[in-house]
Length: 365
Image 1 (cartoon, rainbow, N blue to C red):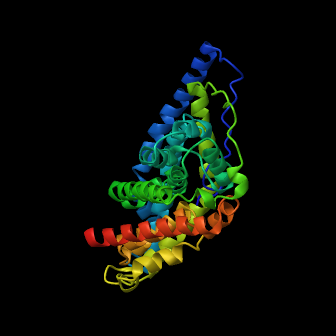
Image 2: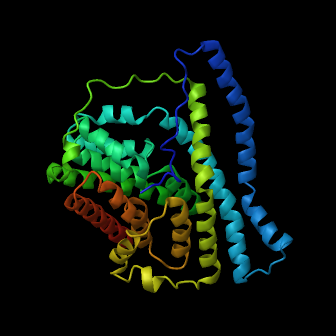
Image 3: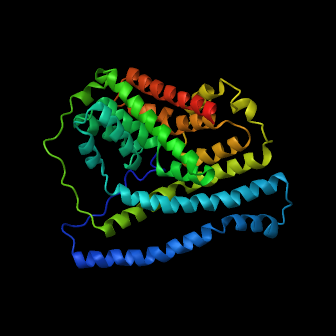
């Protein structure tokens, strides 16, 4: 599950102070755009030269010899670290603007009263763009249930929100390309939809803690705040500060570990442990991943290095999903609102879905 270090769940949308002054807001928006446009051009120019810079830095400035393990690890780190951080800056800003349209209150309003089949799909999709982290798990869960959102639909949201986030998508795209990123997004959505639907069909509302069932929905909701484009751009800037400002150490640490694996682990070494031929590798990867507590920034660069050394794509996807989507701290937090049997069913259904996805991709790819 995501932590506050990887998601701006507590980001405060700027207070507009009532109806904005239209000319002033237009001027503020124009001023933002005048700053952003040249920065985008600079971003594009720098990003296109990263590969050349990594070679010049490794072999021209440090004078490392080609073909050595250390030189391979250094070149990997010098290229991947700025590339991933630059992608994060761009995508987090854009997603931050999109998130200004989807407050938790609006998300609850969209999901409340929906039939489970439709609700599971909407909840999984909304989980991608809604601010969510471990510190907001309990209040969001209570808010959803108390406003009439079905239990299975709520779980579709809780599965999707931590598993599919902009940090994971950016890292996957930057390190693997758009095909793997698309596979991860689509399979994560399918797991969230089906697992939530199954939990809903099991009718386990009785395994919510009694105090949760006693909470009644309020008579009215909060008034929707009117945001200008200047406010939304500021929200995107705040998202960069909140997310990139907190996850960059995890990004660098993960890439450093990945660089070590890239440079020092022999080619094909992981094939015997996490390759397609090891039938037990997928469930073992999930069992190892669930107790771990990491975010996408720390685990995905390691996953890339494992694949380079012979690990199968389905096995490492299963490992990554179990680390990001399920964790022991998540169970501790959810214990406040769920009884142990429902937590066990939740973890079991999601873990089973992840294992199926792992085997499927090992067979197809």
